[in-house]
Image 1 (tube, helix red, strand yellow):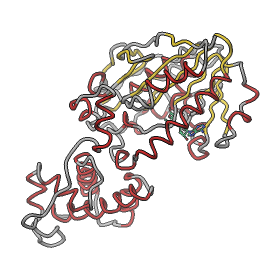
Image 2: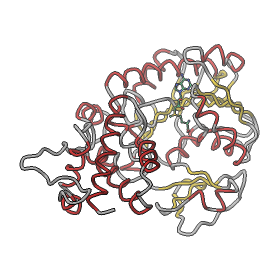
Image 3: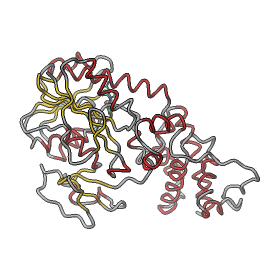
Image 4: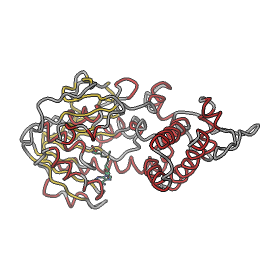
Length: 390
Ligand SMILES: C[S@@+](CC[C@H](N)C(=O)[O-])C[C@H]1O[C@@H](n2cnc3c(N)ncnc32)[C@H](O)[C@@H]1O
């Protein structure tokens, strides 16, 4: 494909991504995969180039752009090769018209910039939310004592973490096949450590998803004790048992919850968990590096629904914790409404509960907990608070 044809293809894909962001449709990765499946003439180099163009446009535009062409014109403002591709030749996009408007460039949507600034993120820290994420793995001590991978770098403070070269094809590594390594951002590894789970503990991972943190908790517990991994999303939860098998995790049981009827389904764990992890559904502002189009999907209404759910899940989790046990509130967001303020509101609603120090290798103190962010810690962004039951 010519450079122009690649740019035009990226514009068409961006139109689909923008439509899906407005209507709650498929994620950009899914749209790309479908487009490539339907356009077999695009070879592997074309696919890589088109993918990069699409993500460059998504990263460049804080607000949802009017259309794919406007988004790509915003990239053309800073990339001469892209600008040159607007030549109207062959399958390329028509030339840029006089006075034609590019989408407004920016890191975050205007309505969120103020809330992020009020949450302590200056402009540079906000821009870092859209940077390139490193490729981190966790050595699974249930499968291997040591792992040697060419070019892997240790991460200070996290003895189980290895940072790989960004283009490493992890799934092809022998250590991946044996379950000796898991792909897991260093920030998620810090969160798992913050739970302080020990061998023999009874742990609930209330929002377990596909079990990324469940597997890390099981490794920290040396596969001794019990983990209940619960979630309302059947498709995500179904991915956990095969992952657990690969990782050699034998102490995790999954349980699918009905939204709004979670407490009844968890009655048998009431008052008995040493640790309950609430890795709550959130806006994901801390993971925009991996999923930059998520900021086009977030609205004030959606954020309000998320904070309501977070508070409700924290209250459900509180009932599961044994006296003296811990509730770990985690969001992969840097908005105080989802992190710091939730923890503070929780202790006001639950007399006697206190925030314990979060014992982790790195992070900055923030309210009752700690915070990690891409600019300062080179991890995804997280807020973590450890709350102790009287
Ligand atoms: C941040 S993700 C969890 C990621 C997961 N812990 C991991 O480490 O990969 C939040 C999860 O909360 C789940 N969730 C949403 N509403 C829930 C509810 N009412 N009860 C339990 N889980 C819920 C979502 O399905 C999603 O999997």
